[in-house]
Length: 384
Image (cartoon, rainbow, N blue to C red):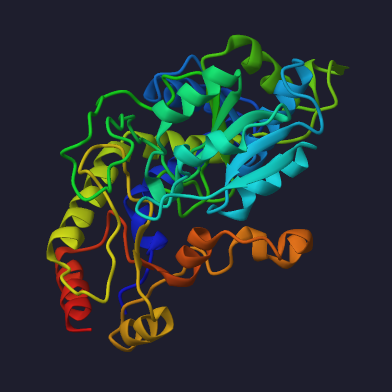
């Protein structure tokens, strides 16, 4: 069996270092908000070209705390509306609701799966106060166009980068491009996405490109005022022990997970390059008219957390691949607006989102996937 994701194999090279780190943390006797977290926050902020990094309990909390911090600063109010992709993992939408804000869904581009900036404008009303840009599957959303709209309407832009550690920004020169090639694209390479305004939420769930051995998350920002509130909110709203400025929560990246992430961060770019190399092979060598390959302009705007294809008869293809010992996963089978949790939305129609959820299938993708395994996956897909 070729597993969809072999976490044991991904973490094996770090096993001895993890054991040493565990002994060090035990010896220090300090398990929360200590030197390991401080070291990681500085390292990840530097990696992302950001002034601040705030380690939190998970990626979901990272999003919620950003919105709550903006409310504390008076830049958002409870009941304000936030534009969010209709095609996203449900956590993006739940975070908005958890902060007592109202999500407004916008369709994606079929080619990139990310929110279509051309459709955002028609959703703008006086109630809209923010945009949540989700970099789905590891591909950067069209931030230049999104930020342009936000500046025009004085909106806050928050980014959900739970799947896109290490992505670098780029520009779409021609917004009407059909995404068939990179000829119409003007790209600005070399700038990590955090070298922008507002705040960005990350998840370090074990399966992410930078994953710990449990739950973990972080927020990066260049806004020192926002960072100050975030540091307090994650720790019961306390800046000084037993002095509580805000109604905060308990959401802190612990010392052990921070220590593990410190060990893995230096290899993140190399691992992302391995993912891109596999993606290039998939894109150039899979040749089957029953399979729709994802769009990519071969820049650093994609770190391929997932490699997601589409096909008209997904179940048949998935069963076929399983019969040939290739494990796949569906990201995601049910659109958020069709979930039982959102009964009031079940009658809404988002045809592009619904088509994506009916057709997508994620192929094996990880830095430990071997060349022979990639050969086999491509061969089997071409025979389908």
